Image (cartoon, rainbow, N blue to C red):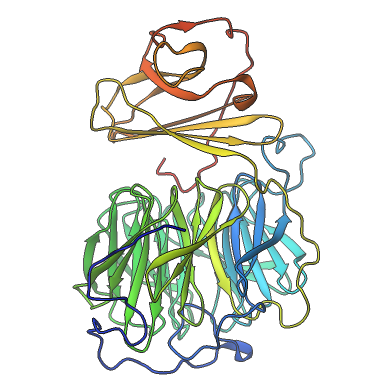
Length: 502
């Protein structure tokens, strides 16, 4: 694919690499429920095969993409709702903003969280069939099964509690009050404690799974944590802080904060790879379009690789055999496949639109092809990206993502490090440079105190001869613009990015 990694130690870092500093490394992993070893895992799991699946939650197309992990090919999508913009209406009863994923320890069930429709959907992995849907409180974000598989815990971010669900009966059995803005739940591998982070409270809650009580509230450096993961040896918990570009390392036994890494702007998700010679953590950094790889070493992890990927890496998960890491690329509608031995991207797999969470599920399809009930909803539609200069702010970063939705296109604009309070107008323009020719105004935006701004508009962009997007000070028009397109229909819409910082 022509991708290169910046390797920070001598040679590749995989099994048998000479740059290892790990000691007392476990050499085998114990089977989990049903005899299936799920990732993240210790060394010793069976090799990846076509019985295994990679899933992405595709927020714009409202699908779950299904990838054959043995061949790294897209099998199709599970359509849980209509693709945008056809998601509104008085009788609409499908899912909106498919976002979070979890799976049962035996690999037979996939849980899917849809943020805007407040839904928890259970899917049978062997058949891709929806077993049922339960509606919980406002804006659930992520959910995961206990290691014994008996309960599914869902973070209800809009109401500040964890919903505990019986995944067989599909009913809520209790609620665990937590910090405001609870974002995700992950369990220590032994199942003794659950860790719950927050999108609105600078704290990490530790929950005793026997009593369902919070036993520790650990202060965090900022209020916005979208993701966390527990290492397969049960020793460490890593959680990301998207708003400040950091990753915090917590001792999963004593609950002490071990250290904080400056991982980079828009730090998204984290997960682990453990080989016979290495203990590694992978972190997606959306503001730099890279995956950073750290050697785990308690309070002093070492950066060993920086892997370029496509636009806005988001969810990631390793294979159970620790040979591959899969990365969802939100603004590229694809999944990058990273080879752990070389720390390079070896393949790009097209998926549904705007993938968010991503999971690897071992033995998801024990027999058969596992292709029943699949569609290809909004796979392979056009998507392009443009860098946007911000007037009067050389250090600011602006970007437009232009995505076909079929009959119409959506233009999503995001700014970072822009001057606080700046007011700008957004135009679609005919030419890449001045004179810009035919133009249409898309939106007006104002930069927040933290230097960020987002807005989105729907219009027929590609078919109308527009080539790019420009920002101008409020009240001005692009240089050399003509206004013959003033009557063109433009709809301002809400951004679907529920992992955004606002």
